[in-house]
Image (cartoon, rainbow, N blue to C red; front, side, top):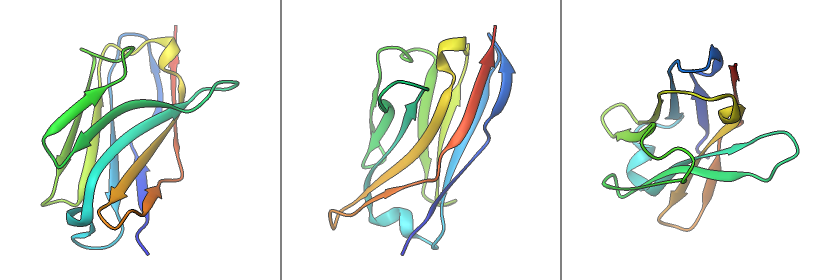
Length: 118
């Protein structure tokens, strides 16, 4: 069983940056993933897509983060990252890492808090 572990969250002020990382627990597990992505859920709201990277190349972003966030994947480090710039208070949420294996299995991380103060 593969576990996804997020890191890099925290409290920042509006306009600052954070970099989230998602590491797969098993060596080379990332090669089995056709896509990986970041989702977030704010209090009282539904979970939404932040960014997704497909086969390590094609990227898609939620409208609210386009131009500010960048998703990337490093197969050599077995990790996926989300660079978040120009953070806004409305980016405050729990961020989740998700991976879709080619077998059809979905994996989720436990979530990490990002808080942006105004």
